[in-house]
Image 1 (cartoon, helix red, strand yellow):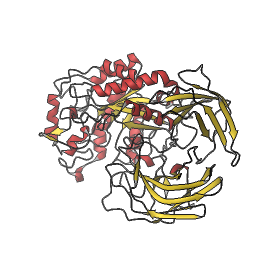
Image 2 (cartoon, rainbow, N blue to C red):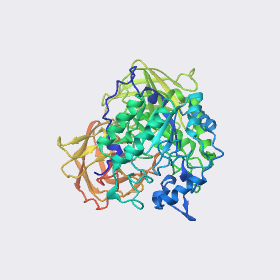
Image 3 (cartoon, helix red, strand yellow):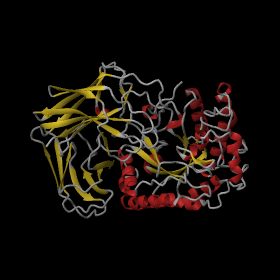
Image 4 (cartoon, one colour):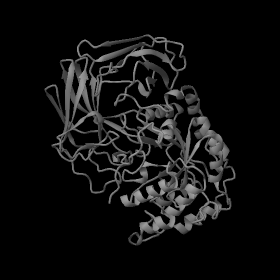
Length: 589
């Protein structure tokens, strides 16, 4: 059966109520920020094979270059990471403000980065180093107060004859997944869950060929050995304790359920000697904030080299994030998502009890305005200057009755990349649901806030806010937006795709609103900048101009009048139906 897009997976596992004494996700929600470590034999070639650069991410070099098992396994004889320092790596996580650590115990190349008595293809028995780094990391995590977790590739294994996706060494027709699970996966999971103390979670990955029954058996096995050990969403088939989007993917609005955004500091996971495209620390801090605002943790990766050294630019950026968190961590650790389902052009929000944290990504205007917050605000103050009180005023818009909050931010000292203002409320935040026109005049209609019509539509919207299965012209999205200021607008349809996969464009879209109809083909007119634009570009298509004459509710419908047939060659995760994330109404001056 074909694999399903992780963004469509719902959390099907029944967990205790959030905040209860038996809630296994409590520590994970509190943590919000973790360190991912991809380290293995692939750090030796570091993106090059036989003198030539091999495209793609570093840890996939065996697959990309179709390196035979007999050849790739010889790398183990060269693996002697004399510079590996577990204490320093855990200290780096602490300095960065990361509260859990996930390291590759076995990646797709099948090599165990720990002592595996059940399989000799491991870092102790097959290398001159003859050392188990997981023993060191377990010790240091206990000492320094970081929760130890393991990555384990449960499906793809290019070394085992029955593992998935090695077709250059092994006959696909002879593979037996149950035998692979019995001979390798279950014995190695037992070792990881019995030899290193409490394990926070097992980060499974790429469930491309295993069945739902096999995923369920793996989950039961983990929970039997360590009942409080979490199981990541990539166990497959919606059986994880929390969801994981695709790599480096950010939801366009607040996600439904618990999620974890896994991301890179450059563009590779495993070490590549030629990838120096490091993301700025400010962008990483904003991505951390955005993740928390959408009920998602942020798992940020480092790829040590073959000697065990963490690249200097990685460490520098993590420490910069730690400095920001040391001052502003109250707004991230243990914080809940934004009370609004949609984003804002000025920044993001998180919540904690009766406090709402406004995270400004840019310096706000002297009079900041927020629409839709119903709850009374008792005070507003900069998080780094709690003694300073910012004047607040709450009122109702005369034309629509929309709650409007105004904050005097003329004396707010803005410090890039994110400045936080804490709002103390009289009760837990309550907001107006649905799209609301912003003070700049724009209206953003997220797919996640739309009603899917008709009742028996095939069209759906994933928990992350992307349309899926838009294969019928009789299905549509419908919004009811609140417009406070009438006017003329440029109407755009915003779609997305994974940057290495084909964009689904060329379909004919139609907008019905305010008694007017706009129609046009989905074309790549512009790309909208945001934190993860390098991986999932957001493409704007201009459909035309719309006039809104009256303040109040505005019904907007998006139809696809002509849907192109998908190409025969489809990518793994995408049905290539249009991935609509929003419709935007931008004011014309």
